Structure formats: structure tokens, C-alpha cells
Length: 195
Image (cartoon, rainbow, N blue to C red):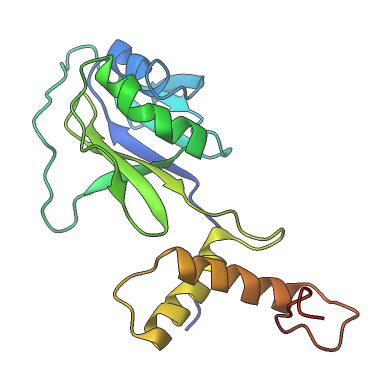
């Protein structure tokens, strides 16, 4: 038996209402370029809109002019999507509350997640959207996931409740030492001021 090895998210497809609501939300609020449109090849009465969230992947939406936005929270039953998290820079994140408020969009306010900051709000169709911003940059050639894995190991080893900044900083130091060679034989911390 062998795995079907994935290499990233190709796209996420959502069921939308009308075309204008999707364009206004994904591009007009979240800044995702509207890059492609064609009929839904499995249901000709629907259109299939494609948006670029900024990482070269795609979010697509099936639209139908006969459907109207229904803002009631989408189901959170087993097997349903709870929320969609979108990455934003720290610069954008710290403007999010003001920019949501100026549109009258209700939101959670800033949530401290230890390794990232989050704000939650509903899209016009009731899907919970999270704006997420990492509090760290991984070393060159190392992924956010690798830093998270190492930070998790450190958290568990130390018996801490959740990952926080100290775990991230120590994980980055450890991964840097493992990833990048040095001419030094001893790479342990030093105090250059005590000599």
C-alpha cells in the first residue's frame, strides 16, 4: 500500500450566490485579483469564478444569478468547513480592525494565538473567515510548518500549554543551526562582552 502524496492546496471551491457578491467580497474587500471565469463544467447554469489569494493558489466560487446572499452562519457539523484562514502581513493585520469597522463588518477583534494573530468575521454568505498573520519569519529555506513542528516539540518537552513566542524563537535558532553550516566548532551561545 502506498500514499497519494500531496504537494500543497491546488484550489478551494466554494458555493456562492450571485457573481457580483463574490467579486465584491473576494476582490473588493480582500484584494484577491479576479483572474479567470468560465461556466461550471458540471453544471452549465452556474459560472465558475477564480481568485488569486496571493500565493499562486486559487479560490474558486460557483455562482448563479438566481441565488441571493444568505448571511446565516454556515453549518459546523462534522464534515463541514469551520472557517477559511487567509494569510495577511503584519502591516495589513494591524489595519484590519479599522478597515472592517469602516465598512460596518462585525468581527472578533484581535485574537492572540501565541504563534500568530487572528481576526474572524463572516463573509456575506455566512462562512467564517480568519485573517491570520504569523508572528515570525522562518529562516531562509525553512517553511512555517517546519518551525511550527520544532516549536511544538519544544513546547511539549517543556510542558507548556501552547506554542508562544519563546518556542518560536528557540525553534528558529535550532533550525538555523541544523540547516546552515558554520566554520565554528562550538556554536553555543556566548557573551562577547565578558572578555
